[in-house]
Amino acid sequence: MKRCIPLLAILMALVCPPSPAAEPVLALKAGRVFDSRAGRVGSAQVILVEKGRISAMGPGLAIPDGATVIDLSGYTVMPGLIEAHAHLLQEHPGDEHNTLTVTKAVAMEGDPLRALRGAARARSYLEAGYTTVRDLGNAGRFADVALKRAIDEGSVPGPRLFVSGPGLAPEGGQVPNLAPGHAGLIDGDYRIVRGAEDARIAVRENVYHGADLIKIYSNSSPNRTLLSLAEMKAIVEEAHLYKLKVTAHATTDEAIERALEAGVDAIEHGYKLSDTTLRQMQRKGVFLVPTDMDVSLAEKQVRKLNMPLTREQVVGLAKPYHERLRRARDTGVTIAAGSDMYMGLGPSRGEAAKRVLFAYAEAGLGTREILQAATINNARLLDQEGLGVLAEGAHADIIAVHGNPLDELAAIERVVFVMKAGVVAKALPR
Ligand SMILES: [Zn+2]
Image (spheres, rainbow, N blue to C red):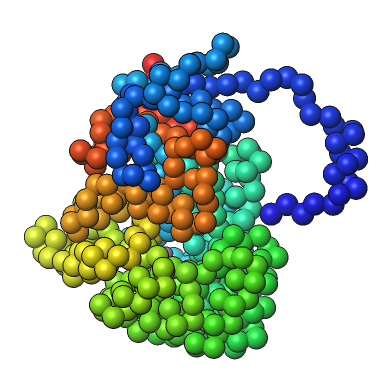
């Protein structure tokens, strides 16, 4: 957020007059265009890009003299994908206790190294076609804010980040079984809240240090502790005062119900959801971010854990989650696509994160719903009108894929071109 100091602004304008050099115009010739608002793939269009935004677009639009032309006529062009639930600064090997992952990150890895490794993961997201990522904690003491700043200033490549800072959690965070003398390690990755007044202070700390949203833990699975209703209400009230959205980790119906009563804007995971709770979410306009794993990644994890499960058994385990996702959709709850991918299971982080979209397909969601969840719905979740759409005035966050993703979801695995804010991040292969 920019704070304006009028006198300083005037002086700056006098000292540094705007450069008279004309901004270069980019013209993208798109073969097909995915309209995220309508959920349709339309025919060829020309998209003009100036100063990081789409200045005009339409079929047969004249290309201005001197414009740099990028020929995407063999591809489907779509808004950059948006990830709603990432942990760029955390890596879980897939087969160890969560307490070990968190304490190693805090005590042995440390924030500078976490941020640097997070930068590599952020880059993998961008290369996979994600131009925006919402990062939800487990990022040390605001190392997520540091990474966001480094990306914004152009020091390292990566998507636009919307970061939460440390998640506001009940006693113990998500770190069970620490010996009493070592519980202080938890403060390196979570902000433990103790009472409604402390909850307000925790929000202010995150606001001060640059958080874009507030993440809370209504329940703290795999831990047993819960935030109180009074604490969650105080958090929501304080965060909304600063126009920040609040999202709640909530895996049980009870934890979700309590978070809704406190007034949160979104629910992460929502593994167990009754029809009554779903209707409440729909009524209140609360988003659901279903962080489901597709069968291919689940099988990788099962192998890592040496679990004697067949593919059919893995598919069977996913059934209740598939069913709740279809009920959520049928109730009219807005689905926002988020992977919660924090494991090292082989593919790059960005590619692994994309598998969540295939998990939605396995649950029975259509490609139109899935592509909208990963673009326009996530932009709405972030309150960002200029993201998740290709339209005049929108940010020039644009990708091109081989094939038509509405006909075949696997096309989104064939991202051949990525542009963020009008700058080419991944060029077409020659
Ligand atoms: Zn998560």
